[in-house]
Length: 251
Image (tube, rainbow, N blue to C red; front, side, top):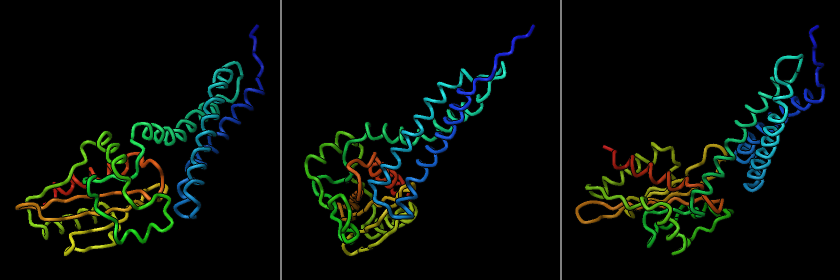
């Protein structure tokens, strides 16, 4: 006689709860950026939403793991698909916060990167956009410089074998190609300023490029500074690296 094990309604309900939690976590993580970028909620609050979305997703993963065996196919068990979906959606939702955490641990806890730590290019026009910024506009001095040198030893001044006027045009072209919002062009002063906006949260980072004669060529220094966040998660350094590569490759 074939024995048929009855359905476990508790496991089935828990699997469904895990699926709903995973969906809620994914929605919470996904909305955290647009809440700041388009609705203007405070950065700390948006990051808090982001963090709580991770907690919800983690709970969904744990509950999905706990129910996937009791609800596995066969013997009239139900809820297996819900458990699998809870795991898949939960992991996808948790990935972005986990990636942020890993980057935060690897990157130095600074938010102001420059190719000239001794005399960083000063913010001039972009200064007026930082009135309500959490991070002060002044450079942090030797302590920040030491952290940058230890974390990003490759960030160095750029030297081009062209006159400053030609170098300025290249800088302008690269800035536009990178999608920056150029807010100041002062070729006579050898200065270009721009704002770059992060894709998800819409955080604004201020950029100033200094162009000056250096022997028979031109030395270019760039500074990229975040308005919010103690750590920039390496974003400013990566921006300078990309700028450097594009500028050296510009025709």
